[in-house]
Image 1 (cartoon, rainbow, N blue to C red):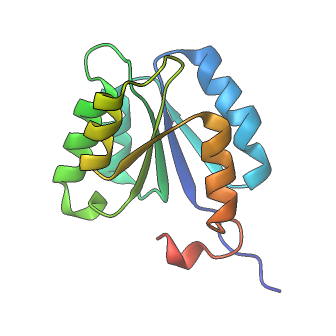
Image 2 (cartoon, rainbow, N blue to C red):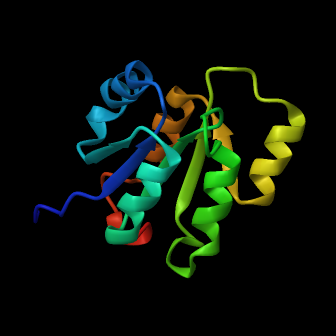
Length: 129
């Protein structure tokens, strides 16, 4: 079997400890985990790079997760990119609805890891690129 090229998974959170936790949980995917500590940093990365999946914290200063997701979705290149909201706080039903309207799914980090595995990120990268 040929080695497949790793895909980038962008992790966006303003708290370094949470980013480290995400990396520990997601490292078994054996993909490139790229971290951004702000919405602005995430946008700068996306201007120059392709990603397979974006995990976004809902509550961040400056640009919150909803604002960031809306800006990302405006770019034609990222309209179909998978995005998952991650939050340490309880997400309200209204927040869930806002996420689903942007085709961004709110999940816990563990559910996000399971979803990435279930959707075959390791095995079939062509379906998500």
